[in-house]
Image 1 (cartoon, rainbow, N blue to C red):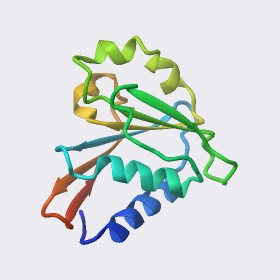
Image 2 (cartoon, helix red, strand yellow; image 1 turned 90 degrees about the vertical axis):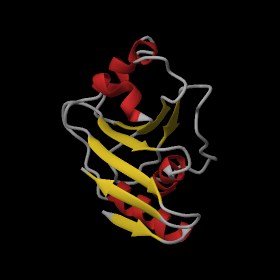
Image 3 (tube, rainbow, N blue to C red; image 1 turned 30 degrees about the vertical axis):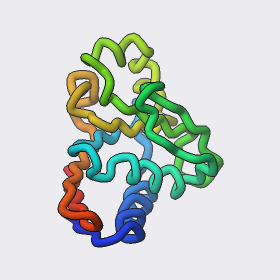
Image 4 (cartoon, rainbow, N blue to C red; image 1 turned 60 degrees about the horizontal axis):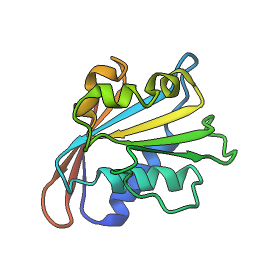
Length: 145
């Protein structure tokens, strides 16, 4: 578990996490982001995206459900960052209909799923799980499993 006490520390955790990932050989790398509203999930995705070279503004795709960002050749091994926000989904079938299985099948995809608990039955059994906890206006706790 890591505690951060300001935005810079929080963003550094995101950068370190991103740079420590290694693509899988047989499927996309999936990171489930769990936590209440305001706990820092989108801010974490923004830090990961920046660390991987995304130059455009990264916002939560709440109404789009997902957004794909092409990654520059940075040595990460990934060619796309897929940011999914499952907050508005009624069930995992809605994500399934968006061809989620095709995203999962591509080892060049790094998939970050906000509100992962809403689509947990679609996520690989062994995905990265990050749990975010709002402590106060500046402090967040992040647990990795």
